[in-house]
Length: 99
Image (cartoon, rainbow, N blue to C red; front, side):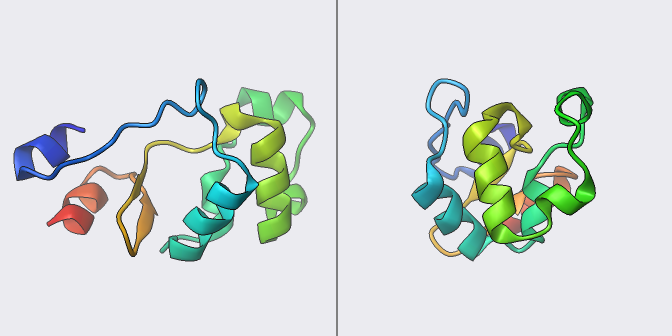
């Protein structure tokens, strides 16, 4: 958000916990994603606790199913414009996308 403010770019913030993306939104996001779809899935302690493996998040259908069921695994920040989307790490990628 800070980078968008610095650049004077209007933006909307979506709290993925309170307003999680549904299947249609995730598929739209993936269609614009410059990263591999699997990059949307966090590999954290919850991923391990759910006993997930890389093989479980390789296809678009798998990624969508996992993120619909376990919204906490959505990588963040995700920055989306009308035409493109990225996982905003490192932060320089956000500046590049919004410039």
